[in-house]
Image 1 (tube, helix red, strand yellow):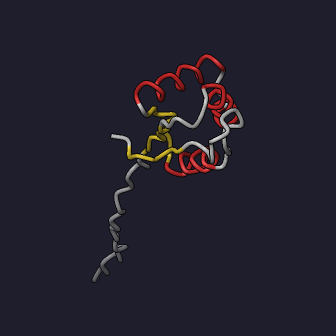
Image 2 (cartoon, rainbow, N blue to C red; image 1 turned 135 degrees about the vertical axis):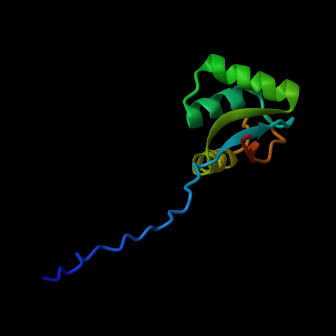
Length: 109
């Protein structure tokens, strides 16, 4: 009696592409001489929900160092907040102020 070979399933091995974790970015607020501390504190509270103490500390850093990291998050999150900063409008306490503050997005290390 002849035995038939048992059919075997061919196992296919598909290589899955390596999934890299999403890289985070920094949202960096840039200093200028066209916005008051009150404006910065109010803006940071409105956009990020930061309390007065934290917003003041960030305003102080941007004033003395020229820039401050506001958040480290996904690029999409940073872009949303950057748009809100750029749309916040001029500082009503400074007559010569023509627009919002500036923020840039940088890759986090």
